[in-house]
Amino acid sequence: MNIDTIVQTQKNFFATQQTKNISTRRALLKKLLTVLIKEEKNITNALYADFKKSEYESVMTETSIVISELKRTIKHLNSWAKPQSVTPAFLNFPSWSKIYKEPYGAVLVISPWNYPYQLALVPLIGAIAAGNTVVLKPSELTPNTSNIINQIVSTVFSPEHATVVQGGVDVSTELLAQRWDYIFFTGSVSVGKIVAKAAAQFLTPVTLELGGKNPCIIDKSANIKLATKRIVWGKFINGGQTCIAPDYLLIHRSVKEAFVTHFQKEINKAYGENPEQSEDYPRIINERNFNRLKLMLKGETILVGGKTNSKDNYIAPTLIDEPSIDSEVMKGEIFGPIAPVITYETKEDLHKIISHYEKPLALYVFSNQQSFAKEIISKYSFGGGTINDTTVHFANHHLPFGGVGESGIGGYHGKQTFDIFCHKKGVTKRYNWLDIPVRYAPYKGKLNTLKTFMRLFS
Image 1: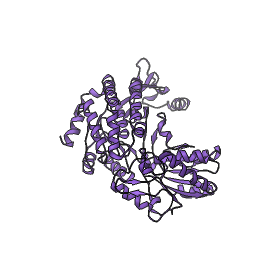
Image 2: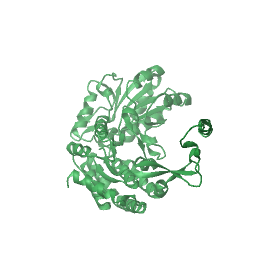
Image 3: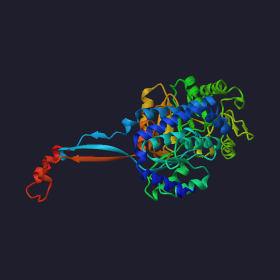
Image 4: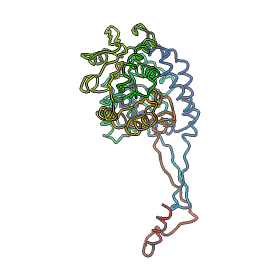
């Protein structure tokens, strides 16, 4: 079946109104939950086959997140989908007003390779829960995971309701040429701009989950030992291939030496003296990205790590000392296990570096001075962040996850995943037992009365 036919078939199915039935949505999501729990081991095996991601890390960052999101959605779907009553305008008295959660229709979800299971399934769950049809395009760079996602979706859903389309750039290009009712994309800034341009042709609403150069500030008052432990975890989980990982480290000059010492110790604790032998350390996704990252190491002073192996795309957890702002490693998002260290002494030093880049997806600050941390959080615009830890804001489903500016458009997780796939349709009902005549022509002699009403009840 070609893409034109797939899209038209889904639009025809949506027109039957069957996807709007909440009982049907819940039944399908429950069926999906049963299949996902049954297939968890096969999913973690697929993730390992794609880039040696350990079962522990796969459960922590992929399967458990999807299962939690799915259970939460099933539990709360009735209340989320229920029309929301809001205070009616007094000028409409007597009346009521409600917000109806209306599905957009045919939704396209394009997911990335770095968390190929979680970042495909979570938006799929939200789109189905909201009453849409879905075409899911997983990454061609993780074929084992994409294949099992295809198997799961085809087991649970009829193809006119939800289907997986696999392929490379040519397939993505053909999908983006279609007229969708909503597009959800996770990936790089450069591809995000292509998606936005394609969506603009039809004024299609989009969610763009992108990336950025995420600063991590270590103040002189920080607990250096604990900060280093948490930074090593957040930076090198998934082999550093995480959109919200700390990208570069801004360390107060007075604590740099202690930081580097503890950094090496924490690497050894986490992955051993030779991380290449660790069962817990993933590989770079492919040769292209391996070569891109290896180029960043050229000519730099290595404080920790630096070892590479092209046989299986291995790059050691690496700390680079004081790279130039114009160096390869500082030009754009690293998206790998390389952490540049740049020292600062004043807030002006910090501002000069952070403001050099577009608004990041995440920002982190380690400090025991509440006023300093609060100032940093308030001063800079970023998608989301954490004080005295890294990446853990992602785990709170009450917080929106998303970027700002070049790091993305829109936020999701929890109820907000459901909400982004709904159009909020405002409806007012007027009652007939009273009809105040002040709004009707002729207007002569009514102006003062109008002003009184408008100002009194605005």
